[in-house]
Length: 388
Image (tube, rainbow, N blue to C red; front, side, top):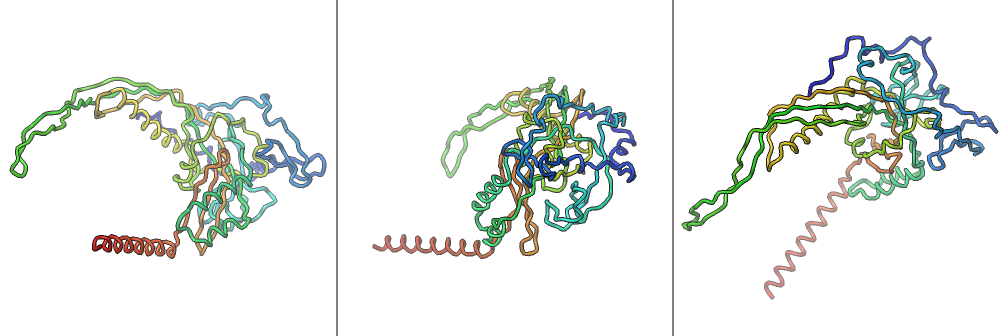
């Protein structure tokens, strides 16, 4: 693919750390005092309202008010040239996990806790970080109880997992709700290609095998030159902006219903953690291009047609590239079991579960032994009946 012009050197300056005096405490903006007792409201996924964690008082905060505005896409070229207005950027305090390097925003009154990604103790620091503001958020649709039920069902389906891990995970350990950062990209693409179309046909030939003469059909392919153009509009190409979770975990949580995205509001984040992105905009765009190229290649093969296709060259022109930074909901549990970290993640919208699992040597050995015994018994029975 032919990407847009490379960004000038100053592009990364928008993502570099700022001096402490420019720091704006995002965590304070995410606090909503209860009208009755002064404790903090928390967003409740089940009722889709704000509920006080202390007295249970409920409030709406106009979460679905259209007056919040629309979810706005941002011009990619403006971001590359560092001409975005300041209202597109924000400064946050993050804490980096010394084990998995996750960057998580913590409330100002929390100085130490476990990393939600790997259960490693993390001490909050005072570093600041400037980044693109989230433009949209996909609110949690399932609460912790439903997420835990989904995780327990998934754990129960794991064969050969140690009983100790299943018991440990089920003993009331809290799940942490966390918003994971993503990029989405829109783009208009036009691709010129050259290749070949293969048409399958068959020939009949005479062969001699083991002294016998016979005929057989042999498949052949007739290739013909083919060229053409395809075009496709890409909408919301999703790219993970975190390195804290293995891609196999996050990909297994898909699909996400991005049509349910809401304009970013701190109210949705109240009571949850939010991770800062560590895959910056340019790298995210490179990954989006890889995804787009795979789709374009499929389109080209379809356009070539025939029974087989060969693609010799593709030249893609990309225009009207826009992006947005969004947050997607994940329930997460990280466990230390026999010195190793194991993570379980639950899609906060659909309840889909993925995770890491150890293997029980004894269960595997018992299954193998049982299998050998069954095979031996069947063999003995077969031999016995043959003698009878």
